[in-house]
Structure formats: structure tokens, C-alpha cells
Image (cartoon, rainbow, N blue to C red; front, side):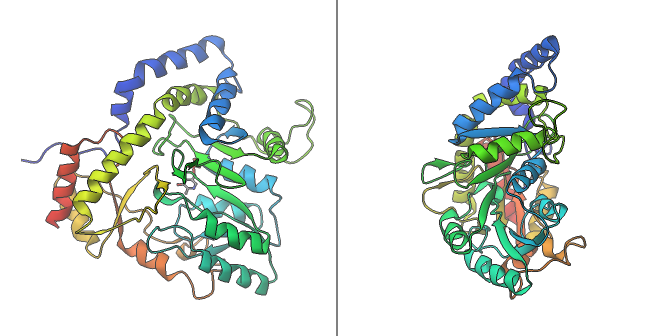
Length: 373
Ligand SMILES: *Cc1c(COP(=O)(O)O)cnc(C)c1O
């Protein structure tokens, strides 16, 4: 007899903890009726900015819109190259291509799975060879681990690249005591339900210390609005966060630091049990991951997936195909020599159930299934 299947991310456990408070927040929005840009949106932006150690937070409709607003504010467009890791979710490159700029795919590091600064340098040279102007780099904090902003920052400074952090998976993480949201000129995050801080639908936010970028992004978010509603000073989008989602996030943010701590405990238990069996994402000294995913590297992926499935343990593969191998993106350039580390990882990674409410007994079940393979 097998036990009941486990959830990959247990959103029900969180609901049991704060469901009543979330429902009260939603009822308050229904009562005041300001569904667009209501008071909860402003309150959430203030609280998020404080949490992230950033001067400004601009909430928006999704993580993808957060990236898009940031690139638009940076003035990215045709003739420009924007460097993105190939081992990431498609949105990172999508926004670049949507704006008519050229995404150039960069390889990642074998240990951290994050952008490789040496590959970035090669990619910048490739962009120049192709007659494109190197404009920006989008480091992704993969699976919640902040990228190496020192090494990437050095290359960016040398070539005049702007840095937009794709922190869709890493909100709540930090690097040498500095929170995600304060590690780059602009940071984009996502509140998609499965992200570390998720709402009950789509949502996102951008962080920056720049008054100028913040003002432009606030305008872009509402159709390029100027002084009033029917004054349009630039071409923008409809990219606002719903008031109801902001209200939900206010309650979730109240317990978020506690949940990030719980994720460290769960990740520590996995590491202790699994380190001698499989490869793990390396967490450099001074880094705190938000642990959006707990990911193994193994030559026995299929066997592990099969054993887990039989034991009612869900697994997932992030990501089975690097972006430069995707049909929609295979026409864009890569760093010279391609992206061999990303290709190897795509063939070997597998992610395990991860959330703040994992207990040691449940993790023991996951570990038993993995090690049985
Ligand atoms: C989820 C994700 C996004 C997009 O966020 P959405 O809110 O789903 O639009 C962008 N980049 C990365 C790395 C992501 O994981």
C-alpha cells in the first residue's frame, strides 16, 4: 500500500495558517470597491520596498511585465544586445525579443547554475562582432539563489551594460546581508502562486533606487500616463497589480521572513541526506537562497523520477531544454562556443518538493524514494 501522494508545493498548509486573515483582507477590498490601484497597492509597495531594501517598489501584473517595464525604462530596443542565461524560464529572453532587441544566450556555472561571467564576456564580444550594441544583462537568480553580482558587475562596468536582476525566483534571498531587490540597478520579481512569495493569480514587482527609472516605470505601467489619465507621454502597457492580489500579498508578506527561515531548515535537511548521493546546487558563502526549487544533478534522473512517482513523491524538471534550443529562440546568437554547461544541466536536473511547511518525516519519504534509485 502506498501513502497518499505529496504536494510539490503545499499551498494548503499556508492557507490553514493565514487563510482567515487573507479572507478578511479580500472582504475589505470588496467593501471599499477600489479594485484598481486601491490603498492596499500603495501599502504593499511601501512594505515590499522596505523588505527589499530598495527606495522604490513598482507593483505590476506579472513577473514578465516587471521585466518588460524595466527594459522599457532602460530604453532597450532594436539594434541592442541583451545578455541572458539560456538555462532559465522563457520570460527572461521573451521580453528582450518583444522589444525588438536581440537576446544573446550566455552559459551558466556548473556549481551555482547561475550566469557565468566569463561566458558573458565572450557574448559581449560576439554582440560587437554582429554589429549590435551591448546594452544590458539580465542575471537570473535561479531556483532562488542570487547570481554572482560582483563578477557580473565587473564585466558590466567594463562594457557599460545596465543590470536588470531577474529575481522572479529569489525574492526573500540575500547576498552578504543585502536583500534581493537591492543587488542590481533594477530588480524584477514575480508573485505567481508557485514562487516563494506568491499571490492567488498573476502579480509582480520592480525594485530600484533610481527616482528617474521609478517614475518612468510608474508611467509605463498605466499606458504611458503623464500628468493625468488622458495625457499619454510615452507608449506604455496596462500592467497594474490588482488590489485584491495586493491585499493577499500583505498577509503573506507578514509571515514571509519566517517562511524563508523554514525553507533554510528544509533545504538543510535535504542537503544532509542527499549530498553523498547526488549533485546539489552550490550555495556560496554569504548567500541565502529563497529556495524556489530544490534541485538535484544526477545521471540517474529517469530512475529517480520513476522511483519517486511510485512512492507518491512528485518531481519536476526545470528546465528540460535551454532557451537557445527552443524553436522560438534558436535563431538568436549564443556566447562563442555555445552553452555546454546549460545543455548538460538540462539533461541531468530534477527538482524535489520544496516549501516552508515540509516536515522531516515528509522529507524522509522523499529522500527514501530518491536514494532507492
Ligand atoms: C516565473 C518566472 C518569470 C515570469 O514570471 P510571471 O509572473 O510568471 O510572468 C520570469 N523569470 C523567471 C526566472 C521565472 O521563474
